[in-house]
Image (cartoon, rainbow, N blue to C red; front, side, top):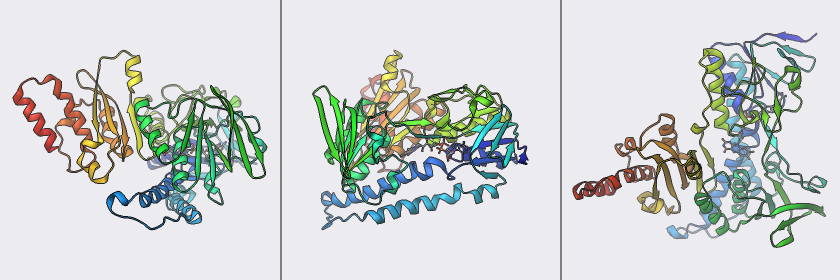
Length: 476
Ligand SMILES: Cc1cc2nc3c(=O)[nH]c(=O)nc-3n(C[C@H](O)[C@H](O)[C@H](O)COP(=O)(O)OP(=O)(O)OC[C@H]3O[C@@H](n4cnc5c(N)ncnc54)[C@H](O)[C@@H]3O)c2cc1C
């Protein structure tokens, strides 16, 4: 006989989204069952954000050591010990893991069940023959897995994805990356800086969802570091032979073959719906994920879907956390809050970083909005000069009256510098509110204020006021 459980909320999947729902619900004293079939922490902790950022951090050190001469600091030789780099990545995961652990969640009062969940009917989830759960509400947070492009020959030999790349026993000497989105390019830069030869192949446009002018700055830096990025090339075949891999590509110029030792596939994500028996619960889904309405409710009114598995939503850890907050507001407080994707920023953690929130220039032009563009280059910022981080700029989009609609930053610490713009968009702030703040000098954050002050410039014709603006610029 299975154990029968009747919690208020049953969460399937203990990744970023599922853990956030479980922790928040438990903190309000609500009974929660959390089911996880593999590792607590999901993709972000084990095979995504955390290991990739830890690897990038090691690569950044190697790069800084090789490039200290500008500062008058040189290292005689830079040696990368790949085993120790991997050890660093493992330790970072281990340091964060307790926050996501079964022990912590059990301590919060969550009943954590290890196993694969599937729907038995519209109101019941089962885990093997051991558990039968009838909850008031279910939250599906089963995430995604690497989507493999259908390339002939790829699966006839070993290939890497984010699920396996962090377990490599040795540094790949020649790495071919298929896919030039954030994941592909972050890993390409990391491995290049750690000493690999790296070629990136992209059928369409690298960093396609980003502002092309800003993406070009990232690509330019990658190429300067020796990453070969080929766009507009279609991979037509992968051949594995004697520990090597030959990738055939087709482009306007014809067919050619690129050779390497390892191939890493970073061609997008596939929502994890397999094994859930969604039909049994009459939950609609397709290859884009589980269909949800603006409140993240599925076609079954008892069931919500959040994070990477929810169709049409951004696939980021912070998106999963945001979704979790919405579900809590809807389920526990009946607030009927709707998802607003304009609030979700995204960052590519290459160096320079590329961060964005709100609408892009292309969207603004497409919607024929009456807008203003404000810009400030990093080289006008004193801290950027001191750090020799002068490559990049901020680009802000406002209405003609100054309401902030979007911001893109490419340059050092862009992922940190996007924070005030997230606040501005969430609060519907006018750009004038940034002109009045006092920021510490010298900091990169002054770039934001400098762009904001630009908003005032054209409307001011009086020479006196122009002089004041000039002084404002000088003093920050
Ligand atoms: C290389 C890489 C780098 C990334 N870097 C970033 C970054 O820097 N910043 C960022 O915001 N995002 C990043 N992401 C994206 C981020 O990792 C995901 O958006 C996030 O982890 C999704 O969270 P989730 O809760 O939806 O799903 P997941 O974290 O995938 O969790 C889903 C969980 O559900 C479990 N599960 C699945 N089916 C069942 C079932 N039937 N029963 C029980 N359990 C089940 C799985 O085992 C898994 O643990 C990165 C992704 C990759 C691949």
